[in-house]
Structures are given as structure tokens and as C-alpha cells.
Amino acid sequence: KQEVTQIPAALSVPEGENLVLNCSFTDSAIYNLQWFRQDPGKGLTSLLLIQSSQREQTSGRLNASLDKSSGRSTLYIAASQPGDSATYLCAVNQAGTALIFGKGTTLSVSS
Amino acid sequence: GAGVSQSPRYKVAKRGQDVALRCDPISGHVSLFWYQQALGQGPEFLTYFQNEAQLDKSGLPSDRFFAERPEGSVSTLKIQRTQQEDSAVYLCASSLNGTPQFFGPGTRLTVL
Image 1 (cartoon, chains in turn cyan, brown):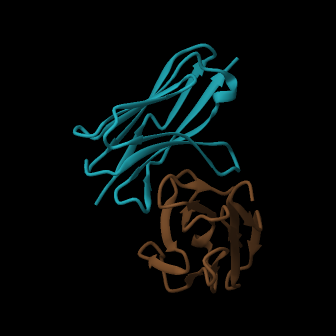
Image 2 (spheres, chains in turn orange, red):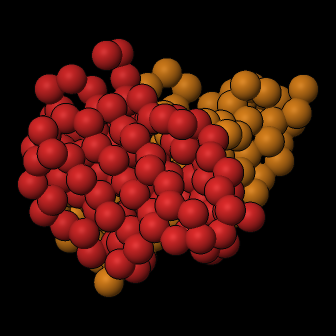
């Protein structure tokens, strides 16, 4: 059974720092991996989607990498801002259907 | 519409009441998913539709949970005889062909 783990569970950094969020999964037979952002009381906003054949995706200050063979993904956030404060969720898709989520990393960026 | 919408946004129910949660997917999206997110946890899959066909309901926690999508568009998640452990945010997502999925804002259900 696929399990997704995110470390750390919470992270506090001062504004301007670069940071890395980690995601690991137990079954490497995935279709794709997606990183989401969730603000308190809100739904999920998709940040980046990496297909199983890809190694990384970039969007602005965000860069996500995927090492399928080792079951790991990282989300790199450059020059963090207070507006980046949110919960970041990693999810894997094994068959183009249901997503399997980690518990998330709650990020707090102080000004 | 521009995105996935869900209603109501908040629902308070007394234990034992039945509730119905609505999801309006993005127009033209074939796939529709329901997830349950408990406080401090990641979303967990409940059920999946392709058009009007419910192809996977393996995540529904009990036979008190029922979902339908009769015309292949709007979907309703019904919970009968609600229990306190049903308190959670219920998220709906739609997709053109399974991935990527676009999420609605969720319905926060509180069972007293």
C-alpha cells in the first residue's frame, strides 16, 4: 500500500531564506507527483506537477524535483516571503485516478 | 464555471442527522473525486466518478456514505446518521481525464 510521508511537519523561517520541503513515498510505481498549497480554511491550489518521466519542474521561485527510484521529491522555495506561509501537501498518483497525500508541512515565514 | 465550486461551505449537523454536500465540477471535466480531510491530516480518497459511473468507492468509510453523479456533472455526497467522527472538510476535485485534479474550496462539516 502506497504511503506518503512529509518532513518536517512544521517549519518556521525568517523572510528571505531558501528552504526545502521533503516528501517520500514507498511505492515507486507512480504516474505523477503533485505539490499543492493549502491556506487555512481553503481548498488546495496546485503548484507543480511532475510526470514520472521527469526529474524536475519549475515555476517562479518554486522548484520541485523527483527521484522516482528512491521514492523522494523535494520542493525548493527560493527567497521565502510571508505570503508563502501555508501548508504544503505532496500527493502521488499511481494510476491516473485517486491521489494519495502526505500529511503536509506547515510553513511560517516571518517578516 | 471558472473553477470547482462546493456548497454549502460550512455545515453544522446534530449527531444522527443526514447531510448532503454538493460539488459543481469544471464544465466538461469527465472525472470527479471526493476526499475527506480530518484536522491536521492530508486529504484521503473517498470515491471517484467517470462521467456518471462510480468507478471506485473503496475509500467510503461506511455504508452511511453515499455519492452520486446522475447526469455526469454535479455530484452529491450524502452522509446518513452523521457521527462525530464524520467531522472533517470534504473536498471535491475534477479533472479532464484523471490528472491533474482541480480542487474546490471544500465543505467543513461539524457534527455536534
